[in-house]
Amino acid sequence: LMGRKWTKLSTICHVKESVVQSTGDLRTLRSNLTKLRADCIVYEREQLQGQIAANASARQLLAEAALEAGTTNTDTHYFGDFDMDSDRDNMEAEDEHEEEGDEEESEGNPVGGCEGSAVGAAQA
Image 1 (spheres, rainbow, N blue to C red):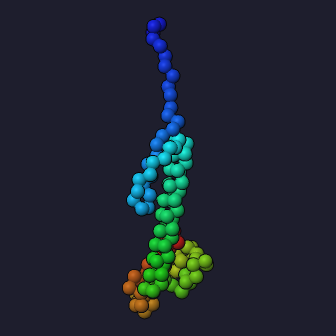
Image 2: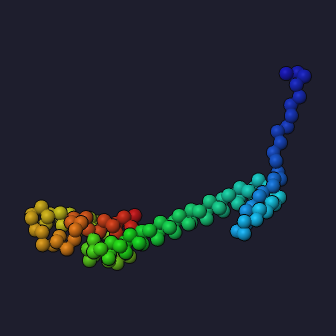
Image 3: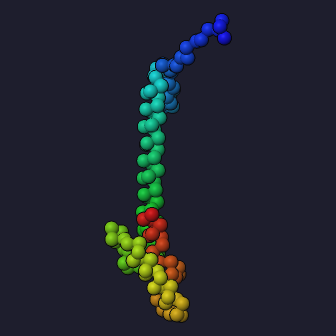
């Protein structure tokens, strides 16, 4: 170890960043690692916001489909007033009616005691 020389570890401060533009052209820029990290974070945030927007759209479409199909009860038509506990109570009451053999209320709903479940999934 006596004759061995210790070298400093170096980091690269400047790098070349290649960017594919919307026209398909390749553009090369000088950049640094800090800017590249910041660009990555911005990109990841944009991707996350896109996923959140897509999920919200999917939930809205699911809720609209449930309304059109008539699989929700009348208490859950206003999404601002949606209450999971009252919906669960409604489903339990419907299950009791089905156990008693009262099929008159469930004839209009092919799903039976699962009313409100699509809206519940949409609100989750």
